[in-house]
Image (tube, rainbow, N blue to C red; front, side, top):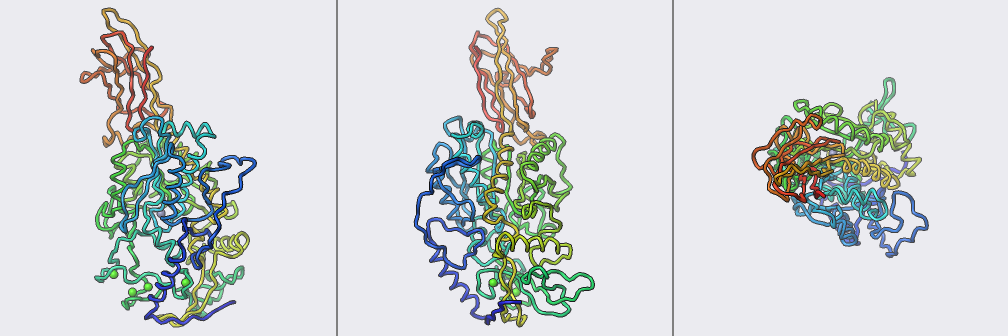
Length: 619
Ligand SMILES: [Ca+2]
Ligand SMILES: [Ca+2]
Ligand SMILES: [Ca+2]
Ligand SMILES: [Ca+2]
Ligand SMILES: [Zn+2]
């Protein structure tokens, strides 16, 4: 073991000293864009750099704008203020494609800001079929916010270069909320944390039921800005130093001699109740709070008090309910390389018609994202009661994926077994995986991902050592891989967007019947993979039927044509000018006809809440 420094701390006064250190850093760190460099934690204030315009490129690299109107470095992480600043710059530079708004305030009063992305000169943004994208519901799962912003940036910057982008934005709207847990995000970025803290939002909660809220969280024992692990020497411990990397602890295998016990994440018992770190800020799970298959705390840890008890949950619900044009959704989490669909619990079952659509999309996702797998939450991962994707699909009929960004596959572009444990994790099966992480750290990051072990006097445990991985290793991409993984994930999201239902009136034909009467036949198509109504939507009557409406004459009768070959048709007696069509399936065709008094021209409008509005005039 090298470089063991000794830091002496007293339990009392410790918190105050950390607070001072943080306060100073916060004052110093105030440039326009406050960032967390992908591999550098906030121990020192970011350097003040002269602002220079980027050097213009000579040859465009495919997939990127060569000289973007808004230059953004996608190799780092931004706090909430930084994300908003990028959003503001994008909206200001691309007013025809991006508008910035807010869906409401978080618990601590941060805006849950929204970027609406579409071609605003074509159609009504809120009537086009739409895709919802959010990130960061779990505070520590931060890169989804950058990936979301990257999507807005890419689309706006590329719209006039790439015809497919142009057409996507003419037809569809994207509602992007980069961080739906902005309080938790800023805590993760600006406070000492580890890769999995915090997961929660920051509404105060008495997690251990002792009458006090948030009284015993993690503690940065050595004041280095990191929450790492604590270990204590023990000749019979369950861990030993890795022969590969002296900073790495690996579980003892049968027959081996131990050297250390692991004592968990850095911290001590702040309130003297005998338990360490039992009640940090918040401590609930925003992704277990949704009013679909919600279950109380004793069934589902993190559920919080009642379905929709969190203001962030309700802000999203209000927006989604007010925007029935949202047909698809992706919610960015980390990690593990999973493209998850529901159901979250075995008690729910997706209808085969919807599974078919999910499968078509998921298969493309697996191709676009090497190392990622299309999976089902309860079956392939674990049971989730009251998850966001279950509410989106269950209550709103929206085709929703939850994407676990970053996969250990990307370390060396090969399958890795185990995983998820991080350095010093508990399970002997993870040993191979830890070695992979350690090799990646040394071979690709010059060892920057780990904090050296240092000795401290722990108020309860005596002499312990603290050290291990930094919070931005293991669950988020290192800087040089961020844009690459972000782009691939975006392309899966955009593929889904491009396959959301899109109704088009394909033809309007007329036939004179004599006596001033005309038969008008309209063919309405949806050439995309997704139907205008998922089966979940139809069975629960979530979205009103599609309306195919004729204007330009007095409608005598109206029909849906059931079989164009033999002319079978079903008459709609009430309000025949506006034919109600429950669903237009993916790659589906609907034919309707009217008997009308008048000679035209006639105008037919297909109006689908999730499939958009299309109009065509007869000749
Ligand atoms: Ca408490
Ligand atoms: Ca520390
Ligand atoms: Ca305690
Ligand atoms: Ca503590
Ligand atoms: Zn998550």
